[in-house]
Image (cartoon, rainbow, N blue to C red):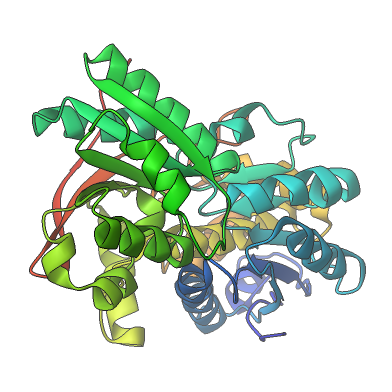
Length: 401
């Protein structure tokens, strides 16, 4: 499945020539490894739309972009196969994705870190990624669940909920977030009665629900993806094991409300990584609405957009599409010092780089300042389902534990 999205030609434009820089044309392919099928399909579609929006803006500014899309199927082996094809056959200079940490990590270990191609995930939040042996080729534009676990525990306690059970998808994302939440919640005086892992794509979760319901927790913290999450929620409601739920980012999906009914999910709350309002976030929201008609309720379309911009800007700064050179320039364009470049300002970045001026990209999803592990800091959104709609309550930085 191939979509023409990212082909950067013209690392020097007419503006650059006017500034005395020799004309230099480059072609760049970027591989988008997103779940177009499987448990995270709904998120894959919006992430790809974010990538396409970045493509449109970059092309309008003088770039000519081609992105080759690989379907991870929300499965580790399929993800590795897709990434391998993008690297070996399409010879991409960078990868955007994957979404699930359980797919991103195998790709990093088997492909990007081995071949030496930079990979930027806009959705993989597992704390495992921070210290992963990836030869510094894996980055992410979304904060770690080490922060989201604290954020979710904080807002849960603020609502005077003292006892919960946890069910989590049994992969790096689910286990990492469950452990982070439990540690923070118990440090705040809360009690976790049960923490139960489950496998994706099962027809029945009644056994796991019965285990989680022991000791009458009342609220279920569900760390899942939409497809399996819908089955779990339906069976919890039908069996009477739980009727009050707390979600994480993987379940911020309108499809759940449509399938189960607002009357069963109204009052449910959760957290998702989200930036504070900025010039970049305002531009992205306006550009998204102009392109797609309305803001998306799902997360990680802005972080995917930022990943494309960062790879494109790194190629400009490196004056090369060689994968290692692009990797080496990522922190140069993402981190201070440098003149601020916002989303939608690719032409400005070209002029600055051609003039030898350092840049600092301030993203749609916040400041994308990569630390030594390729991680970024971040803030989180508390949202609640009200009258069947996902309503933002606040965006905040969690307390330091």
